[in-house]
Length: 468
Image (cartoon, rainbow, N blue to C red; front, side, top):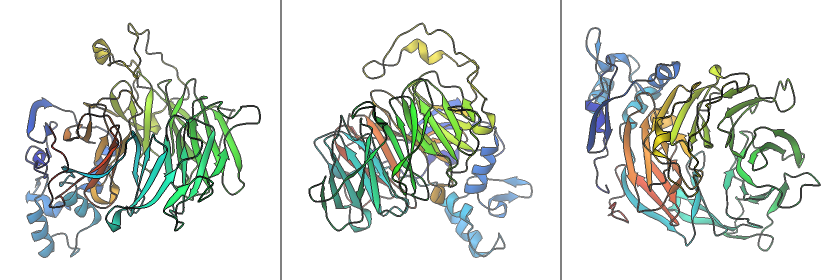
């Protein structure tokens, strides 16, 4: 695995005019055909990551995809596109063929489980959160030097989530407590001990009569303008905190079970997506609450609880990871006004925290599945495993990637559903992973306390671990 070929073998099997694609996972191939996503997002993805038609044209009326890098460069030199340069889609077509699969190389190792790992928006910083109260901010541009080592305050169970403000000056962290703490991430102090070397201000998401440990926060995110923080909690609610006013501005009793994940849909901050153990994804429009705690729409299709949601950033598409061992792609234009369909009685009982998914459950289909596509192969067990769209700048968001209980990171082709890469690291669940916004580099964090990176073409050094 450490020295696997990084160029996608899949390119030889793609056929622009056909409807099938051969599944590829490095050296393993399957003859099982996969259906292309028949949706507007297919065209959007091709527009973002496909080359100019003159560069892909073999003969009049016939195109060949993907186009080799050599041919792309030759076409640019000959000005086939008439622009004299690559467009952003041309660049994505080249870059997206080179996946960050060489490795792993060790970034850091702690003696407690790693729960969170995220690049900053510009890729210059990386944040990792651990169960043992530590949150570390690494300076990626300076050889992964620890820029700030934060010792979390009033931690209950683990650091459940962190979020860096858009200006990278502040970081919020959450645990199984209604108090979310905010830290000055831009201060010169390397060691940040709560209220000893630095102030970790507490943002109280509870009401006066809730009590200190009345509920916990599973998910926390800054708004794009950095003025608000949205959170999902174990009391079935969504909270919005106004940082300028320094008070809770909104509480929505959003679901009938734990709200495991929340995020803003786009830069406007008007739409909020939420996912819960009640199996529903919901869309909330703060501009037009028709009735208290009533969503703008509900998305049905998962058979078990939802562990994570990631927005494509366009206010239209999102993906969700589910305890039914699947990722689903959604278009909110297909949502229902309310949950009108019951998937029916389950003939099995299980708890994802300590049991394997029942074999008979894998064949069950939701009778009212509204999702655009479903991606399977990874394992969602023991913890709230996260999934994401690949970066827009370097890949045109043509991939989906996710952690997995079986110690791997899986990368799927969004349009075909093919599993195009599997990154294996030791034997512990990979809860979170993050793809660098501009470079072919992916970092994963696992329950053995390791933070490791995968690259193309690699650092030139031997990987830190064997993949076996």
